[in-house]
Amino acid sequence: MGPLIVPDSSLPTTLADLLSNSLVLRQTAPYLPVSALYSLAATSKSLHHIVLHSPEVFRHLDLSTVKSAVVPYAPLDSGGISWRSERMDESLTEDEFYSGPLRGIFSKLERRRLLQNVHTLVLDGLSVPADLVREIIAEDRFNVRILSIREAKNLNERKLMQVLRYAVRPTRPQGSPRIKGIYFFGPREPAPKPDAQSNKKPSPTISRGVMSSQGAQIGAEWNLKSSEALNTALARTEDKWYQCTGRVLAKRPSLEWAETLKACEGIIFFDVVLCRGPRHDPTKAFVSEGPTTGVPNPASYLNPAIATVALGPSGCETCHSCPEGAAAFGQSPVSQFPLLSPLPLHSASIRAAQMPHTIDGSRPPPLFVRCEECLKGRWCERCHKWWDEDCYTGSAIAQRTELQQTEFTEAVQASGASHLAAKKTIKVIGVRRDCFGCGHTCIDCKELFIRQCRTCRNEYCIEDNDASSDTRCDWCNYTSRRTLEMY
Image (cartoon, rainbow, N blue to C red):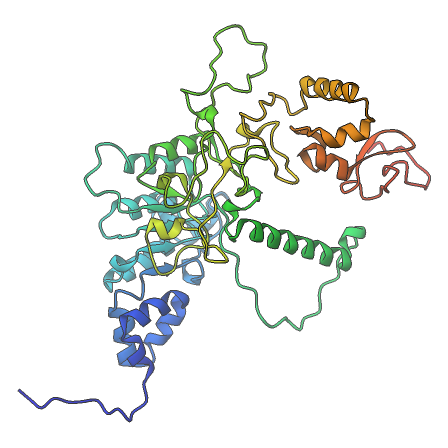
């Protein structure tokens, strides 16, 4: 046995010495893009060995910023011109064509024995056909736990739903599928803004009125920032699902997706959850057996639907709760919580992806989410106040009920007070559509934004009618000569 060689303590610590520590490497590698990792591996033999032989480096792999992962071809719908110019095999399918760049990257990682180390895979915005998703879920060469395919291109949703239903079938092998979470419905992470502004002169734009001016744009931006700061302070978290965000998803998912999430419940988790309103429970919902009037009953049964509206942490405006109960993190079943954005960098567990992070380190707020059908007539789209089924039955159409008006009139007559004084003492609930721009609003928002024109006596919104004033609508406030424009 040779003599023990002790490293010279007088030599400075190198980057290779730091990265050779698995803890430091695991905390550092997710922040580096793939191009930076390969550039680092090309600097020296020691760093090359650390990057390409450590299982910690590619545990979180983000390919959304890799240029070679983008399909550089034109769509195949142009008569097959681009297809034939490449002289490709006629037996090549469309999914194989669009998944070519990603298959090439996966092949390289597999040859270097790095593909098995990937636990979190981000493919946002790339060309990801459903067949490629099936391979990631089903094949043993992949070991992905969390997959992100938000805003993916060339992805057949119906085929993807079939892949997911087959993966969670009752006769599946034990321990499958390996994948536990999929990000699909939410928007992808925004690209980081450059610190230094470009020296190029801005291109001239056509003026489109007062709202296109620089002052109006700055004011709108500050209003948005102040609203987001207020929501964060009230909910004590920056996660949109726990704030009074309103509609979280830009596009409402189909009912087929709700059935797919119902089949995957408890096996594969998504960045959305199913609505747990009482109308989705067949034991609580009302099922009419007599003749119908053509208008659905407010308490009738609803098929499973995805919750798309975030209602904030305070619950119902009257009872501050809901019939199905709020979802409390750490106490309620994990199937009641969505995967939160951004993706966790240092862990591929579902708990890490679902855990909300509060700004003060306190206990996470409760989660109140519903689908729009369960909130019809009982949710204000401006201030996001809402009432549950126990506090306000509502109606099938989004208007205030006749019972409210009757109770209001009787209270005014019984008290003998003025109309304005009685209006302050009685709390009118429910919503109606007073403005097509604002959506369904409550009585408080109507008093703030809806005015009655002194000239034509019609109601108007002071925010959506740009040319209006506080006393006149945009039509009556327009002083120039009016002409009838047919087209």
